[in-house]
Length: 317
Image (cartoon, rainbow, N blue to C red; front, side):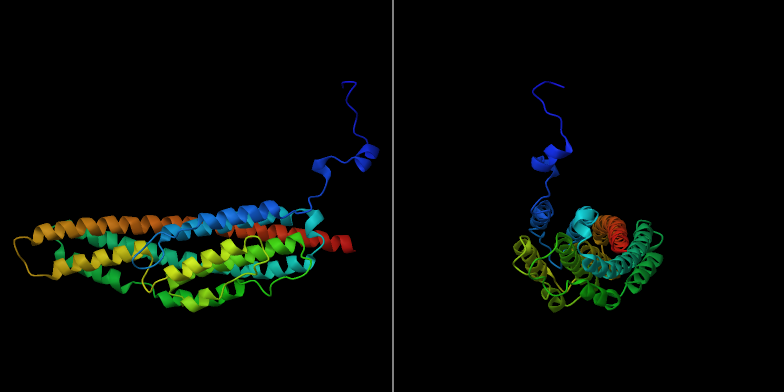
């Protein structure tokens, strides 16, 4: 040790604490800053003639997973979580609704991917000149297997509404409660958007999502809510609508009158349908993977909250 250096002793640390040992007066500042940056990254929403595309939903779901991970870091800090067990208890309840929503969305995506297999089979048959009738029957089966959008809304709509944060916190709010309030708000935003696009949720249900302006991320949050509400359409997600439209054009060619140009028109329509089907599958796969990542993040954050809650109970004994 150089002579000019002084050893750190409990006494010197008591009267001259290092900056790293001082508790931050704003422990949620990095969390809030990351939240604002993430919300800004969700805009603008890509234009789509029907509704919000699956690609944007993937970004939103991944953003929610990151928000949960950031919140878990705050919740795991015993100096923060021990002071607000009520907030932890409330989150343990609301996190179940998020996990149930993930399960409902994952099941819906699996049905979409199953339909893709039927469509690929039909397109494969169409590529063979000897199977036009079988191909037409396969397309009809694909059309009948369309999952009812309202079924997802009915099964998960209530869950999404339960994700919405409760009354706006007022007065002195603990760091943990602020983080949990943010998680619940972003969960209601992202889950609401996914259910609205895939399940045909009403715009009015989504437009009711809002947060108090006293939070530093509130303005960015409300802008995303407004953008999603304005982009919601009556149709399917962009990639799904493109696949449906390409199949309709293909069926029109198949059922049309025979002529000298029908072979070329059929080849062109088949090529478009194959491209749209692949884009639909890629979008569905990416969203499925994003939802799986979200489920894991939600489980980890819930486990962290449960552990912090138990530690708080032990300290009270």
